[in-house]
Length: 166
Image (tube, rainbow, N blue to C red; front, side):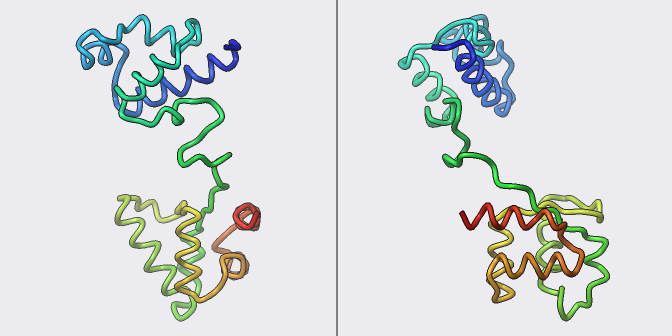
């Protein structure tokens, strides 16, 4: 195993552990000593090679598929995360309700679910854009152009849609 690969694998291991709110000692305690803090730490730093068997056991301990721990993979198997889509909520407030009503309601719902009321911007996912396109009875690329013309989305959003069309 190359040292760069070991470091990337270790970074994935550390990310999963910290997402679960565990310290290295917390792993040792939760596993009742099965996983020693010093060993897991050396895997995470890339100082120690982990066998396939041990990696499978560690994935099982964390409750994640082994492929989530392997470098070069991201959740869902995507090659890279899609570009972010950021709605300008201040500009959205100035778009006539007959045009922007569905988008305003959708954005308000997301804000409510997230407890995010900064009122300036709101990040949305690719799936949100596809859902909005269905609501507006338009393709995602046509809707993106409409939102850009309203000033609600930055022109960089085109890259997110072209990324989606590939």
